[in-house]
Image (cartoon, rainbow, N blue to C red):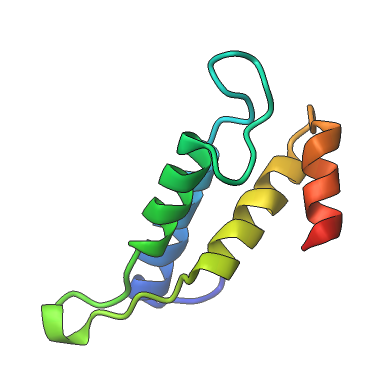
Length: 92
């Protein structure tokens, strides 16, 4: 990255950490999908990522739609992409 912004770097790092820890399958081996506990937990963690250090200046740039878009993109960017996740991407 060329940006020197500490806030932007922190945002990218936090989002990267959340997405990289996202599972593509549930404990029973099925692909995760919207509405599953893991899906909802990951989406909610993304929406809690904020920019700014002081309480009155915090901004939460991730909404529901952007969070889910990033999650689907993450799943589709992995080498072992599941056909169901490809279908989700076409539905966005």
